[in-house]
Image (cartoon, rainbow, N blue to C red; front, side, top):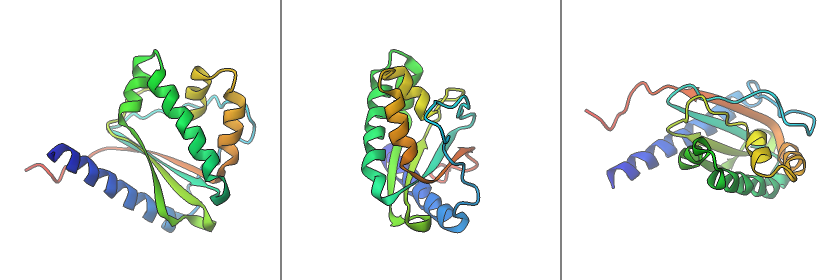
Length: 163
């Protein structure tokens, strides 16, 4: 029970932090998704203990975004690659109840622990699992973004649950 309480506390802390970062910084540090429907060559690697991604989604496109996240879950869980199944075990998706910048909806990905050195690019994972549907999924995913996303590596500096 203690482990799940600690994980819940960690998730709550990250969600609160992310919401505050989104409000304070707005779109200042936001990376917009690729404008084309071609998968990006840029990899999103986590090289630290944990990571988060702040996703700023159009309020009227949340159903599209969540549909793509459901396909992402399926892709990770059904992958023949062990590193993809590891990603599925530690990757969580949260939705903030508070509105984001310019009326967007904030979705937060947490990866704790991170699978270090493995690509977290959503388009790459979807293309591996669903090659015939990859372009349509990427279009649906990228068009849901209001202001882009922030990809953040995190290094643990203090675990307050330990003496």
